[in-house]
Length: 429
Image: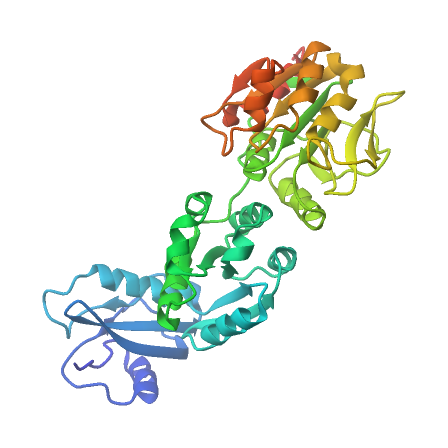
């Protein structure tokens, strides 16, 4: 198969031929008269691959002034007339992406090195950081986001991977999970598919892994931007307090709830089951998606409007100190309902001020929060449970509802507005 001359300006044709040599004489392969005349070719990497019966020219180009070249090169001519032009569209996408920087996360040194060697063999892919745990992955991805991350199956099965996926979603980072065997792919959590994560297996060839990276990269979504807040005449009663508890699936749920919060929202306390190393990153992630300020709670910190406090992971229970001015406290103690921090501990601590409280229990596994929500409900708090349909795991909300602690069950997208309305009064304006 031959590829012919470039039908652009003579100077550009010389640049192409100086790199590629003589590619042929009679066939046209590229045509885009809209390219700027100052076009400078930096790097081209080519291969010929067979798709069905057709040979397709696959290219990766990095060039100066890429933004000016709004129309990608068109693949045309010189091929059988029956060419499926969908592959030309794929080629045009590949043309735009340039080089992809990839991070690798695998706790095993041997497989991590093997994946790194595979990435280094790939065309138009550069190797970024190689790390051994999710905490390192989170902090490096947050400070210097790669285009894609390869994560080992063992790390993808950890509860903290949910936090990492939300960071990837916020920053537009794509993810490929490498299962230990091809059979393990079917046993991976279904939530990975919903998050748009591609899955392959450790026995896949270098080219298969590259194609997997390419597919997720081409399918990358724009970075999520917090939804603009509608103007509201809502103000909030002095002394009102919002409490939120969540576990499995709770990171995504908390993002959706907090998106509704305005900058002057009532003081809010959150317990989300996560590890100590992830709580600070989770606070920053939630802060990106909330008009109010979200931070990790500090002991004896005042509860003030516009401030959302997240329980630090694993070491203390987050509670409401109800004596005098409202403050939070971090209390050392044993596990409660199997957790520290515990949703039960937070809810139970607010019983003395229950008439001021609106509490919501979100998706999660187990029963943490059920007893505390029942105590709040009996003391006069307004209590909300996420409904089964929108819960990733309908465990904690179900336990609280069946125990009698839930006054109202709502879908996730209605909970943020509901807790705010419960704490509000209409302004005179």
